[in-house]
Image (cartoon, rainbow, N blue to C red; front, side, top):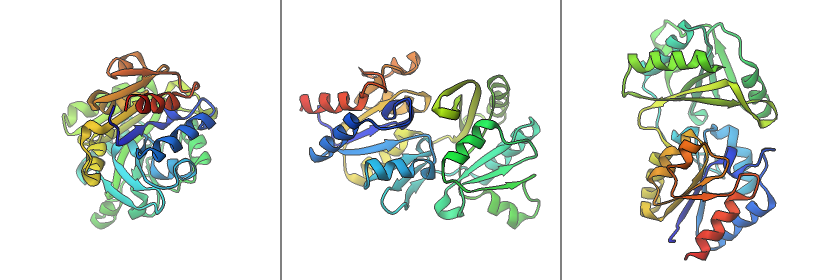
Length: 291
């Protein structure tokens, strides 16, 4: 198995149920890098939400964040590439969420905006988001609505990587369907159980994420391959969730961990152990064994 770049998801894949990286997985990452393999994290978290663990475990290199919307240099924090949502679509999705009674979470490219989230609307911030924002060093700003002044509104709408909200699953399904009908094929819309206190998945609390239609972890992996001069066939991917579908199905070699959703796992070429059982260490051993 020829591998130049090893891409792993974080939550549910590299991280165990306590949100930690095991000693065995840390050793495997070091072994892979010593063998000339670039290890890249690809996560749904924003850069600020994954910066600490990226710097702790990797120190240098690249991380794909916000579900494939951004590529950051770990050491400097510089955003090397990004895919933002157009102003008109940010405005449309934000106003749609507010009409449905939700607080819109506009995730920004913080390296340009100077802060992480613009929260728009009068609805209360949900408990899961309060916990998440308390755990991570993110900066938020809140406004009751988008500004009517053209220049102020433009500033609110720029540098947006993702529009989202957190609410009950049944409510978000209705909102997602409504937005899909209003702007078909122009957006990538996903929703699934949100991470809540203690890092466990909430069954009824779901996260809605809206991206530009071109955003996907695999799309940003392709951009990274061009930057590195690496053929896509030399990429190995590891994941477990809905936002890993693109990289698991498109990579020549891909592994789904044992705790992955069955529909997601079916798209991967191979299986790996549970994320509590050193899944990445298993994958690295397989890569090096088949060289």
